[in-house]
Length: 140
Image 1 (cartoon, rainbow, N blue to C red):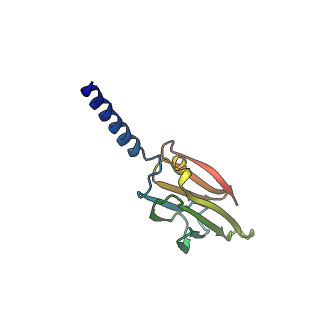
Image 2: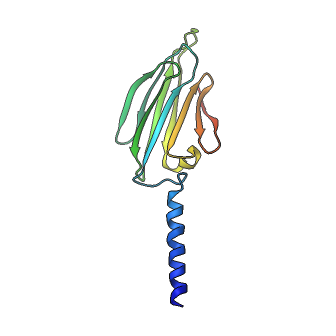
Image 3: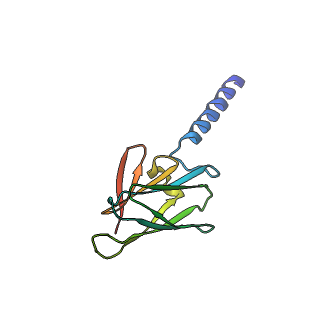
């Protein structure tokens, strides 16, 4: 009976350790990142400001095909919202959209520790590193 109990304890510890190493499950205290990429076109500058309860990041500008990333330690209430906008060089009105760039409960949809956002002509697209695909999350 004693050796069976030890075997169960070892199996439980391994299951817990392997479960915590899964990057799609949010782990409080681990480092996470938000990356914004300007893929709008070859002319327009993306402007953005991101906010959480504790931080304001920006305002920043990204020239075409540039990217910018910031990192933070995850807490139980971590959430970053970003205001994004650009003035089209074609003369159309300003394009604006607000996104929830990072939310603890959304970590599985990022596919890892990076929430990667691509600003495109159609809106803000979120990348999932497990599937290798972008999904449109917010239109201008």
